[in-house]
Length: 160
Image (cartoon, rainbow, N blue to C red):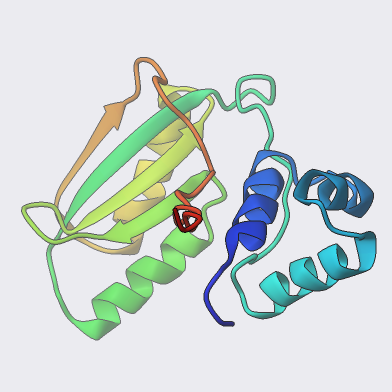
């Protein structure tokens, strides 16, 4: 896909805020008719800019309101170790995010669990799968900012 224009960016802003907006509503807000608006959205999806549309759920209302960040230091750096570790992580539904890091910590996992016992179960699952040099968890005390909206390119400025 070529560079995003101001209309594409506005469509993305709308969809990041509320993906359930109708094509008619989006088209009206970006000053397009429905067919060209629908084509732009389809092109954004086909190019992979829009990966998928999802519903955001309330973790507390679902009984999994405890966020835990797990920092792990590997005991082994072989491909086999990593494949076993990654496969184990993929089977754990409480894992929301999983990153390999540069620095003192090798991996960071974000969990959403019901309580400390839920964290303990996940921790035991991980430590049974592979050996670690160090595992530590940090419990979020308060959520200060949460968003799924990505920063978008600035809208092109009109020539003066």
